[in-house]
Length: 394
Image 1 (cartoon, helix red, strand yellow):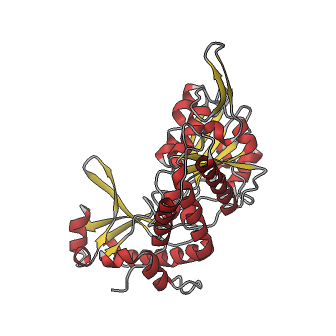
Image 2 (cartoon, rainbow, N blue to C red):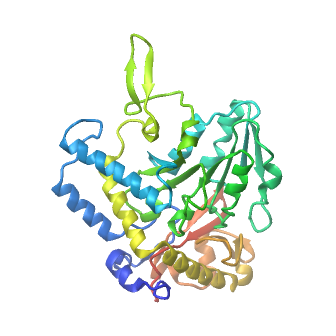
C-alpha cells in the first residue's frame, strides 16, 4: 500500500507500531484516535527528563521556554494547514469539541441570524443550535441523500443579513463521506462565516486553508498522530476571531482586572480564548507529531488509506446480504471510515454472533476495535476507521 506511494509501510510499522504485532492486535478505531508513533513518545520522554519547563504565565527561563514552544506549535500548525499567519491564528483547546464550544459561547448570533447545518454533523456541532435558538437565530438543517451525502446547500444559504454561520464536517464521523470543500467559498460569498469540522478529515488527507479559506477549523491533535491527548485547536481567521464576543474571562485571557472599578481589559487574538494555563508540556510533542506527518507525507497517507478502504469495501460487499454498508460503497469522495452492520440469518444482531456466522476466526487471531452505534439496546451500525499501519498479512 504505502510502498506503492513511495513509503515502506512494513519498515514504518516495525519501527513505530511494533506493539501491534507484539499484542497480536489489529487497530481499526482511527475515528476515535490515531495510533501514536513510538518515536514521538520516546523523544518526548527524553526531553522532559532533560529540560525544565515552567508555567508560561510566569516570567523566568523555564516559563520563557514554554512560551517559545507554545508559539512554535502555533506556527507549525498554521504551516501544516497552509494558513497564512497574517490571516489566521490558532486557539489551543482541549479537543475539537472545545474548539467548537468557543463558537457556541461567543458567536454573535441574534435576531435575523442563520445557523445552517448539514444533517451529518458531530454532536459537538449540533450543539451550536442551542445558543443560536436562544439568541433568536433561525436554525436550518440540510438533509442527506440516499448515499448519506448532504444535499447541495445552495438553497439553504440565502443571503445573510446578520451574523450567520454555516457548519459542516469535511469528513463524516459516521459514514466516511467527504463533503465538498468548495462549499466554504460558496457560503462565504453569501455572507456566512464557515465552521469546518476537520477532526476526521485531517488525519488522512492534506488540507490547505489557502485553498479552503474557512473562518473556523476545528481539530484534535490526537486524531492526527495519537499523542499527546487533551490538546486540540481552533484555527481561525483573524477577522472572524475579532468578531466573537465572550461573556466570560479567565486567567490568561485578560491584561488586567480591577475589582474596585469593575473593569477588565481582554487580551487580543488567540490568547483571549485560552482559559487558564495551556497544556505547555504537550506542545513540544505537538510539534514532533506535525513534523512526523510531514515527513511521511499526507498525500502518501491519503493514497494508502484510499487503497485500504477500497479493499475493505470490496470484501464487505462481496459478502452480499450478510453485510449492510451505510454510505458510499466506492472510494470516490469518501475517507477511511466505513459504517456497516453484520447480519446473521437476515437480521442485524450483536457483532460477535454475526462474525461467527460468517465463519471467520477473527477474534482468535486478533483483537478488533469496532465502534458500535446504538439506540438503546439495538445495534445500529459498527464502523471501522483505518489509517496508516497496515494490517498484517496473516
